[in-house]
Image (tube, rainbow, N blue to C red):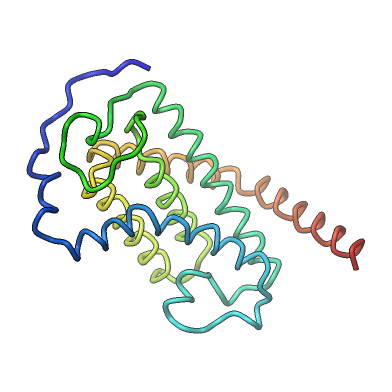
Length: 209
């Protein structure tokens, strides 16, 4: 995979962590850990009946409550498909353009990973695809706003810890937005697919019981 263009120099950007140990820990968690909330939210939406969902403000934002069980399952499918389509677009972008991650070119970074193409950020693609989907499936603007804020934190933290350049985050946001637009345009067949998934689960459940 060829490296195209010249990488800009971000020396101060990747050495700013030297004086902020607490902020470092927060950013490391945001960069590596926040993305794992997404499968938990999808599973919670799918398996938890409406009456058992919590009403706390923070958990309401994460779990998208106040929907029927079937609506929760349909929403989880919509979000999941949005993430998958966005990742496919992100992969295609990575084949068209590539450059090494900051830790691969001599920067003093907080995290070091295996050598790979840094463009675009897969983590950021996932969290922004999740955020755009939440903005659509939820009726409350607050939920979408918080989802976008958390996604932005992930993107910023990926640059802060030194695993991506800012252009990688911009590419990821673009890939996720395009992925959401495609899934939104195909929302009727997506809903039909979600209904089919729900029927399959009901059939399997009846057989087991």
